[in-house]
Length: 239
Image (cartoon, rainbow, N blue to C red; front, side, top):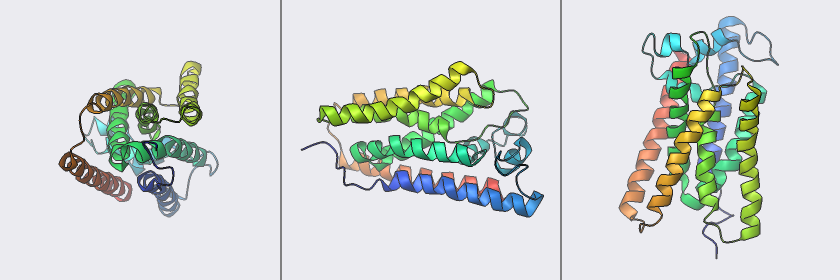
């Protein structure tokens, strides 16, 4: 038998993805009510609108110490294509982390690496830029997913899944090499580096026998973290 069940429904991964979709729909509704909708429906939200909705920008996050924007920015997306691409990539990497390592590591990986991506983005981006999106968190989950896949015994299956995850990493690297200004490369780098450290930590812990109480504590911490993430996002979105 293998170390994971392919029949396990990755509820945490799907739940986080559904929340990102919900926030995008709410963002559309709020902009329609407040300022008449996105400047161009297909192009997406303007930087001013994203800042109003809770995006990460040095002027407000650091200048006015609105540090919760480091969290809420993860759930916002500039346009529909941005959301769809991130949702697909999140499902690709998150489902195997959840099936092999447990749902708590999807939550911990998503929140921790997404936060670190926001921090590095804040440190490196110009004052006029507004950063949004879950791509930093997804880039952070990718190394964790590669570690999780290394635990599979089916070599052919493992190879196919590693190709999918590697494609996500290569796509982000390709965009970074092209130097596209509209992409927050700092968030990608911050997420990937912190995800690499998390994967190394998990590799070290894999040599220790799992303790049920530790697992339970991590699950409770993860549930609290996801709840806090949702609360911060909704508060920044609505107020």
